[in-house]
Length: 443
Image 1 (cartoon, rainbow, N blue to C red):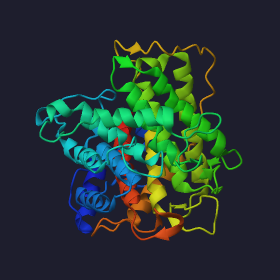
Image 2: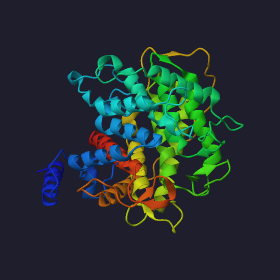
Image 3: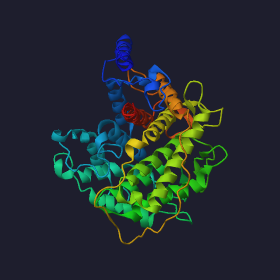
Image 4: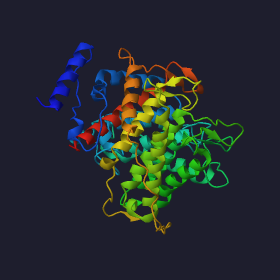
């Protein structure tokens, strides 16, 4: 019996012993048979069971009410249930327009339901996709609404609304009406000019996807603005001393601590924009190649640095460098997901889409050198595995709730239940599956 078969057998035995269903297992080979991919413990090879994941999905659905919670849930559903249609899927950008049982794309229902709900409760007369005092948070549902619009013709029974008009109104608000800093960063808040690290997960992925989706036509102005907004936000929030992002700057109050969830938001948003940009014809042009290098480096520097503050349990503190704060399994799950995505980047970066055209209103003139590549630390993947183990230890298999989480409405306080924390578990497991599938190809 080879090691892969042995691991699969042991996984089945463990699942039976602890009373979990013997669902799909993910085999792996020993380190000497791989190209430098290290798996530190057997527990890292054991998937979270489908039954538990279904409970997690039900939980996040039951308590996701705020705009960013719905947007994060939609992305989590997309990546875990409908990975073929995400930017991390086999088809990439653009995804297929036809989603039917015939092409194994039928898991769209959960994402369409979120899009339909957003449109149904949207008041008339507003520019944003949802009524919210935040500029950035409502934009997080934008990709789900774009998915509904993109696949509408093949699912007329479920894609029931005019999605295009709200999307155009949301984009126009971002580009022309939202408050900005003096150097052009879109404010995360509407009542004051203020920048939050959360913004990077909410707005730039929407800008990038909006600019890239309708290939062969690519709106390079909007696509590049996704990168520019991240770059501007980094100027305000990145602190080179710990190599991490502060949470909130400018405005009437600030949060200068290195909030772990905020660092996760920033890194995860960067990777989504990186992969989206790469899957267009513009990915090989000078300024877009340079932008991708920056995004990869900036996301990598966050995970490399934040894992140096990892606790013996495998979890991260709510404020990464502040030992007076509690261990937070919610941000730990999000940061593990980013690490898995970065570790499997070679499987995600595809290069040029055929026959793309460029918006003639913006030209690409950059021809300078790329910044040196920042690579994942040798221990980063090990840290992600330990983090995933910590999340699994805090995940109640009987009801699917993640324990030891930050209060999503008071980021300095420990909470009891977190909609975003449940979604982060789904994002982590989707990224882990993708990493393991990539690792299998490296034998």
